[in-house]
Image (cartoon, rainbow, N blue to C red; front, side):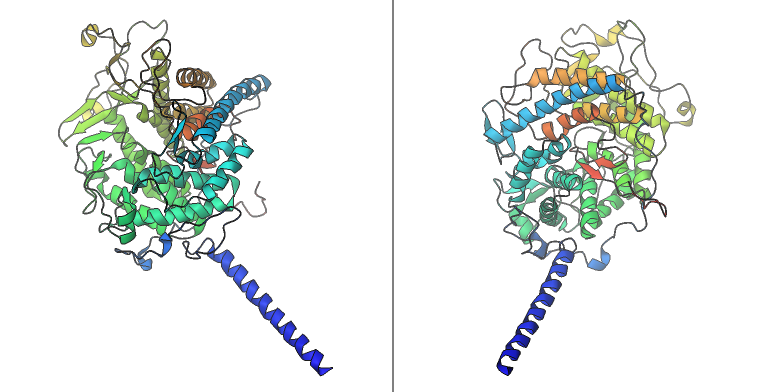
Length: 604
């Protein structure tokens, strides 16, 4: 019997060894999946996952940051933050309300479905649909920006089939295969990385986190510069060789709009390196905030090549600066209130904007009732001594209403909530002022003259943003634009979301039901002016009556942002609650970490 026993023992021993090794491999792999920065290169992130052909996680850095010098995420349990959303009652959300909003929500969903199907049919896998020629265009490196940007919108709208289509597409994307030799760090972060992280937070589809980790490791190379400030012009060849250099003229928005996405990636993976590089930017912003030519705000353009130099003279909440300010309060919330620097920077910046950048328009006396209580955000030129307001209104700047209101509620500044509403209603009023019912990309408005508030005598005087009487002599004989729009510098509408974004945020914060009607009026005007056979397109001039001229462009933010905000304002307020998520500047909702429930209390 011995000749039978030995093989059995050997086989049992061999089986035990195999099982032991398999167990070790299984647990090591599971642990590595979210803690090794992507170095477990051969692992699978789930069905459909195709790893990229270049592993950025193993690229040797030219200017390495020692691991001991990495800044970790703030320690401790997240704080209980002040409530953001209005406490909606059953009376406010009665049957009649719900029926009306469902009809409106369904209309938005139909529009989104039409645009997605147009993209699927004519531009699948390309960055954008060109709606007039019904072809695809690559404007953001050719990875399929519209698919990435639309992921969470499809999920939120309950378009399950379409969501699965998009997941299958993005799971197979190879970041090393592009239609361009470079990409924008800013655009790639907010559209691609933000889209992946938000869709993962909502769906828990593992493959989305895998692709986000691959991309995060690639974008991390943008910080491998002599100054450790990021190079927005991400040239793939130079990045692989460690040859990137930060720009001598870089926009504030570019470097100030990375904190949400990089922080969330560190939170989800446990790897501190992503958070560490954006925390370095935070320190530079914090240290320079009081020393600019308009203390409290940063100039639109910065010199990052040899550190962080903020000596420029133009200041705005609009283009090239906007989302840097937006991210201050939102990063504070995403970090669970554990980094007070973001609160301090936000409050300083908003105070300076109130004093210098905001203005009230001079309105004609043609209103049947009281003048609308509205404000706008302009641009300031300042050399540190002379401060000049340029009353240009950008559609991009219309996000500021939501920013003021959100920060006002988060930091318990009731005055900022009011300012947020005035700004949001200002942009909605500008929509109504033009024949198409849509406001232009850039216009100038006659401002009320405000009292200077740069000394103690006037600081507590009459409201510097008070109403003023119409002055025909300042208007002149111009009859080409509606009063008080003195110069429509760019009459296009590019399918932008910022106006409805602020209306959505203000509705969720204040609960004022008339904002729903404002939003519906905006939706009807926008869709009527932009609709094409298979999708929607940007228009050339909001001042026309009748048929609008269209351009061959449907940017990915149309589905990602504009239609998402329209859908959410007509949805149940608990859907993507502002108390549970922060939206990145591409409207991708990132989940806010919560403090543990009290002992003995189960989480809902």
